[in-house]
Image 1 (cartoon, rainbow, N blue to C red):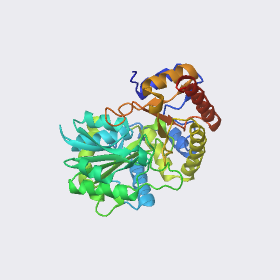
Image 2 (tube, rainbow, N blue to C red):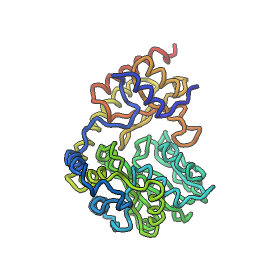
Image 3 (spheres, rainbow, N blue to C red):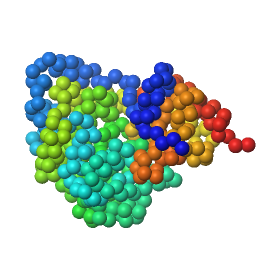
Image 4 (cartoon, rainbow, N blue to C red):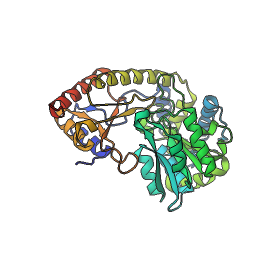
Length: 383
């Protein structure tokens, strides 16, 4: 059995020019024009070539604050309740380093973004999982969640959840919130892709629930919501007293985000927001085209994502490990997808693979699915 990471698959696909890139959470859509221009205008200007302010340019902190107020009705003071970081990954790690001591338990969903699970380990925390139930569209079991949460210091999750793309319902969000209150736990909410939503779905940020703002830190970024992958701008927002240690750790971990990138991010967040809905419409068409073809492949059950760039399918019926399936598919058909080994608990993912639909146009997504169908017929059809 071959256990392969996302990086392994990307490296192999890089060596095959013209391959179908369904493994990497990139996009072929151009970022907002006004964000690109603001970034260009900042290059060479002394103000943006500086260490200061370490916690982010005031106009970016203001833009982040205003975005949460306009979108969710949440109010965060740009001076003390917003910290700008070098991507959302740094923001997540900063919060975990602030609130997790060696052995403290952190509750996550299973599956979850591997970068979330491994950052818990980097912070010295103990991983605890509550299952997303595949047979129930990857939704949570509230009773199992309540049992798993006992004794946890942090509840760490995202919606849409990566890699399943499920958007948790209000009832699920309330169950997570109740578990946090029962255990006096911090909620660390990953909202990195909370604007990429399909079929009228809405993300319930836990900080909007009664009494939950004071125990919630939300992390976000411009990476996926605005297709600004290379800018590497993220942030953490939360009550002043919760965010103070996060600010301190940011100084010694990330030091500062790129000033030029901050200028572009501020423009994206404060400028016209129609760009986001147009991107989402494009992605929904791609999602639908890919899934329609994949669903004609017998033995490949999948749940259509409510949001995000991604979804996963179950290949258990083919009797092959995910890593072997993905490597052979790339070698024979030039189609790159990702095995989900340890995307969540260490024993998760040997029978699940992930598809990304944001980096290829519809016709190539359909052709990739055609190749997968031929590959399955060739190797994994019984009788």
